[in-house]
Length: 240
Image (cartoon, rainbow, N blue to C red; front, side, top):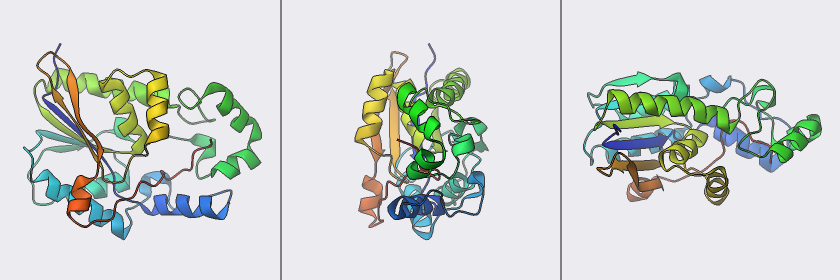
């Protein structure tokens, strides 16, 4: 089977939505105080620094043949800062967008329990992977669109080097698909480790038609450049 030669995945830098979610949870609020819609949430000043640090790391490795970017503003801004001065083919791909929480958009954990207790109960019964909020997506839904994306990349870029700039849930699910994890393994990994802003995860072809893990959720490039690492939740605080 065709396989990529190298796959890199970068989470966007810290966004103003990450800060709003953190503040809302700390204050026990029901909703995030955030004006823009999710696709229009920009990076924070620190997020722009983190994105620039990704760019400096990118200049130390062989260049990718293709960069695919989630169309959301925070990922576009991350890619723009990281790729500044590099002449690389880029394209936005909607399959890399963040998970849609539908009716629960902008609600905190407390907000979901308070305003939609039946949804909190349904989510607890179904589990994180298969729970689909009203009008939104489950992790399994996101995995389906990513499975199609990876199949296209394998077909169109065998042996190539591809970099994805995307969101925390997508990073977890790319690992799930590439490493052929079970639902239980994925959920345990997600509980153990939050995906850091501007982190880098990489896999390389093993010569046998598979990708082998080289690094996951790596922030060494941030620490090496004295850039503060963060691992804040996405724009929408997910019910637990």
